[in-house]
Length: 491
Ligand code: NAD
Image (cartoon, rainbow, N blue to C red; front, side, top):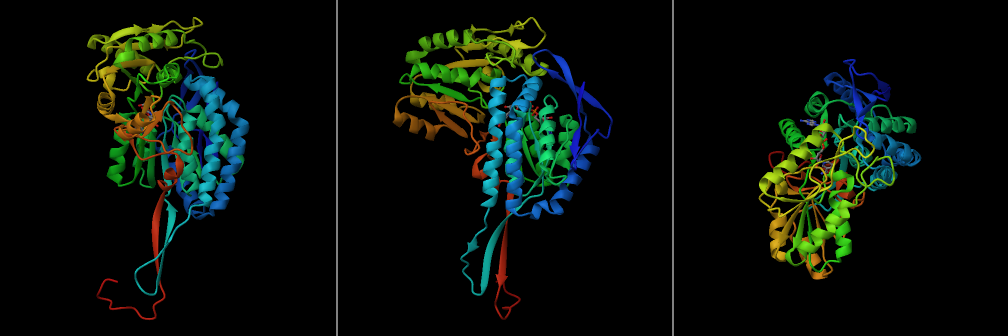
């Protein structure tokens, strides 16, 4: 069986503890590779390598040099995109149509941040005092601990890596224990491009054995975490203890709101895309569907008909529309939420249980499931399921829609379906969410900041904002005065 080692200080190496664990293909439930089980000793070595790389030159390197390497990386990624997508699909069960789209898009991140690195400028401050020149320098932070979940490993790693490296930081990446393979494949590409050893490191393993010591390490200057709320809280507490910044990209319970004046054909597709794409295993899932009273019954009927035709199958097959659930714990969690929804009195109008494996195999499938008559105080409307389970709620008018949509602990994203421009603008203003999509859903770009309000996270990834989140400002005061003023008075 194939083995994926650690990548530390520019070398592929076995884990210090000598242990390996298996990773499964979610479609077959067959183990297909062995992953190095990293421990605190490996974290120590990786952070030391990253710190050494930072201090010995990368942290002070010319932006043009870093940009050149990032562009070379983008070129190699472009060639490797199809192979990377295969690995991703084999390891996390996401549709090849989607992993292929994601890996083909990754080079854009590295090229964009390469350009931003070359434009990372300080300012000369028009200071209000004589004989001094004051200017600022955006400086990197040091070693970044990057921690990613299993649903889009390479894309979410890239959202951290590209701006962090562009700004002159070095990185230790800890991918999810369920989907580590693609991050090591990425390390191979870094290796071929010729980044200085230690600039990028990958330590695979479990949250408690690698993630916890990484965040606690005294030389880690910032943590960039994407994952669930429990892990996010743990990371944030540990970062607070060490007084270091943390970017958190967490979960959601995003409303997808359909007004009677929407283009209904398009709204049906947008609502389906919001929850059944990626088998609902996406942070930005539109899992709460709010439908205006006057079209409610007809719209539910359309959704049921559309989702009922979804083709379950092998995620490596381009024709498949809904793939397997990625992990056993996630499968159990989805089914338990279906039970909870029934017990709460929600009306199941589609699916509602496990689905047989489309080819008679062992992989874990859940039927695309729709609950109607959901109230916003039910757990199925408040908690993240992270699976193909849609909750439908009714609303009376625009104010009612805003009230229900914003009555949530989360605020990652929201969708609005309307042909009324005034309403589109008013809803975009009123919704408490980091992203509002109007007449579209589930669109992301390297150019557009992404992140959560409320319990959905802290900080933003993508866009120019993400670069400044990986820098700190130094202010330099340079005096040309011939005489020092009174030493006992503040200048
Ligand atoms: P998870 O929180 O269980 O794990 C995420 C990563 O953190 C893994 O690598 C894990 O090993 C590590 N980890 C867990 N606890 C840790 C700790 N205390 N200290 C350090 N590291 C720790 O999340 P998951 O189940 O892999 O992913 C699903 C979750 O991710 C969902 O809640 C989803 O909404 C969220 N997510 C958010 C976004 C976003 O951009 N907002 C994107 C994708 C997924």
